[in-house]
Image 1 (cartoon, rainbow, N blue to C red):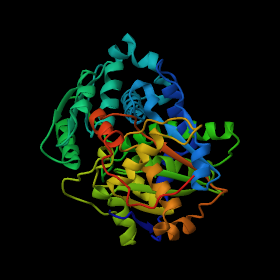
Image 2: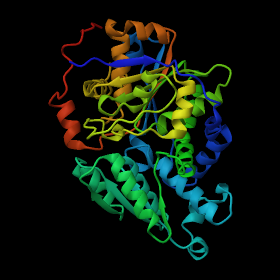
Image 3: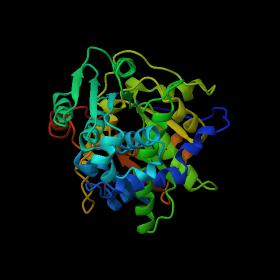
Image 4: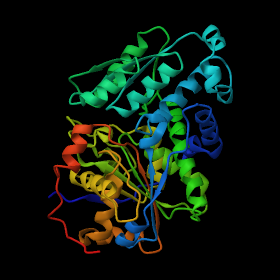
Length: 410
């Protein structure tokens, strides 16, 4: 069984200019926008007391995004807010005026008209963009990489988007969507990865993700945890990770939590950058085959990278069994704990935390992070069961077993 790889962050710091993207004011605007949707409700924060005791921690909390807008994943937060900010910019207005009622009004149709939002996706982001475009009377075109699941394709098509599965990887799909947007009247690329010359919309998407982090901070306070000591967050291009790390760093500027960023082994571009240690991002190429489809991205978001290199404690590269173990642990919880239905890209934090706490192979990492019985750990289950056949193979059929790992009695 492949071991988890990890590296403590020893990269030189930058000037940290991107941290302001996730300022408390920007995140407040995003949450105000999302709360104007009739479908909006705060997603649950699962308090896993039994799991915390089992792992030897003070508290384990999992933000359950399977409830987000009925879409089974958090991604819609980013795409919808980026659309609102784009429309606001085109109309010379502030995004605070872009409520759901206004965006769906005849007045907006007359004043703005219609744009076509292009995107590439492994599933959840594209569904979010398609759903938001559908609800707001805009158009969407979505390209998916080879190997994408039919259920994820169908969910996007149901929202009225034009959707294709291409014979290339995710990063090539991004380039395809960007080129088509350039050639289309009122065409806009809505992608959560940034590159030189394309940084504004990705920063808006990250702010949209801030709604989830902001809710989680509120919910922790409601159960008496003023601040988490540790935040585990998964990364594909790193936009979600940059959003979460940036928000909590701004929320607790004098005493931020320790941040752990996890990636799929097949697409561990952030880990590779941290391993190189010079502060420059690295790119991973190839087919990026992993069950963590939402994390199968080989080229980092440059805005997020700048935040992560300054504030993350450890970068972790996880084989697929880590996610499968996390899915089973959350789906069949310790007695008394709530069940969290978490998909392949959502559960890697749980599997990673379990390995760090229960397997002495990772004792050095456990000690470096100071994970102990006083730790209050927050993680994000970013998707529910979005690929039912794969989910069943993991949970029912025991795909990606971990029986070689040490067993721990209750």
